[in-house]
Amino acid sequence: MSTATLDKHEPQDAPASATAADLITVTFRIRRFNPEVAADASWEDFRFEIDPKERVLDALHKIKWELDGTLTFRRSCAHGICGSDAMRINGRNRLACKTLIKDMNPEKPITVEPIKGLAVLKDLVVDMEPFFQAYRDIMPFLVTKGNEPTRERLQSAEDRERFDDTTKCILCAACTSSCPVFWNDGQYFGPQAIVGAHRFIFDSRDEGGEQRLEILNSKEGVWRCRTTFNCTEACPRGIEITKAIQEVKRALITRRF
Image (cartoon, rainbow, N blue to C red; front, top):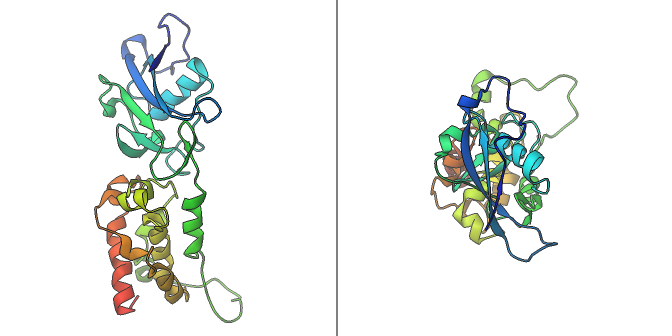
């Protein structure tokens, strides 16, 4: 295990609001993998000073910009909306942009590794294609019959409330990659795909509910869920994923939705 250290006497671009007294020394232990260099992954330590009120994403930027430019990870909006920076931080799936360093027990090494269940391409970047394919398979779009309407399809506030929770999904894969069934069965649709289906199955304007239910009724569908609640605990948006999965199961049995 190698360690990179940033000399505290070197110039640093600390936020204007941070003073030297605000900074603490932290160690980030990151799971590194580069298929062009080695066949196996390894851990690498990075030790540097940072304001504990900064986010894990800020620390990763500091490492990439000041210590090791080869560190590879995904991020975009940095505000918990795009979902691209989901990773395992101290053993739990989280968004790096929503995780404060001070909440990660910075007295000990903070571990960062890619989410599980998806092939690692490099460092913290995984192949998201199987995840997105499962989402595409459940038809994540409004299905209607007849002619195209000349005005918007109206819906009551009560009907909208029925599926409001599952509209919050940002496709970060934190829920699916926290699922033990998904880790061991790459064919399982996974929690997010079921949440995506829920959003349309219970939409009063949609007419494709039966089709989606039949898709999820397969051997790799909703019945593979073992109700461990990992997905609900991992969701950065607070979606009650396990509840949504149970509602889809109930709809499959009763055919009422």
